[in-house]
Length: 94
Image (cartoon, rainbow, N blue to C red; front, side):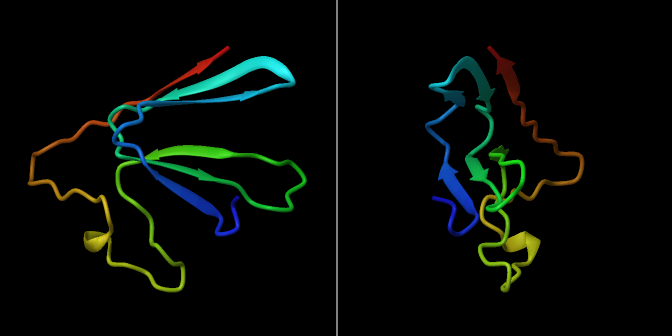
């Protein structure tokens, strides 16, 4: 699933994601309604496996060998001086 190392989801219609297991009743819920993208990534062959779940407002380079100028990256917003933009998220544990 992570052959390319990173999964990018268009999250405009998603405002939360839950990570759970059939082996336990524990869950982690990430609420991120202000973010247009959700990324999922992991690193193969690690001693301690992990899954990183990150809401993104702007996206990273599409290919590591072809860096993109930050002003041209998909999802980046250019703000005027004194203009602000707020992104919030919360994490719930069960």
